[in-house]
Length: 288
Image: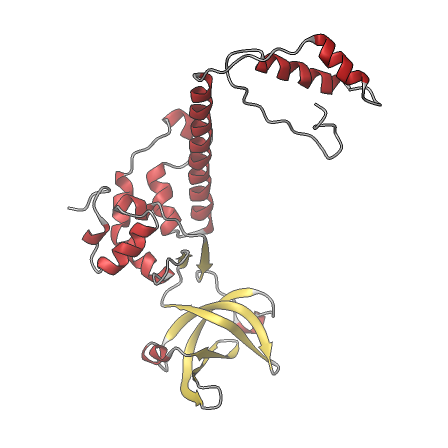
């Protein structure tokens, strides 16, 4: 039985070569893989009719393939696959380069979904570098990892997505209710397999809060660690401070004097100072 702690090799079709690539990128267990989130999506679920396509937009269309033609450019030495299709409002043509395997996918009479940037070539509307799908899904796109393509990663994730309900919730019910957040299990499932744009938004919102919480907690741990350290107190006599200020050709503002007092108080204790001095360019940070 697969568990969150199981090794990647327990996924069907994931061999040693893929496992090594994942491991080099700090993905060793099934939970690690579930935590490898998509960075964008292709939405095939909302289609535009061919007659409404506008150059410059990214659009999805549903067409019936009417012709598939193979061509070889001997001058530039690459393979071309020309695909023509139609919907109820018009016709369109795509060209795929150096992808001969697509001839076994695109058949005359077959209905497919395509997505890409709408461009105009020789006064004909087409899609630039179109992506295709067999059904109107919202397709997650993952950062490739060496030879691991986004589609391959998505395949492995789909094989274990059922484990998302095993992930432990780390926020209380009160916080989830207060900020209208979905449970972590739902967020992980929806980030990988969203059905709507709302799913993506709610998943990102939940996971973003978790990430920010971890950053804050880590900062607090570092701060507590610093507080336990000891250092030598430094005390500046008022005379030295006054003599230094008299050398300046301007007077310090009340805000600057306030910060100086806080810094002097910090360094007068036996605990290390943990302070960030912020200010605009020319706000006398160096003097302070």
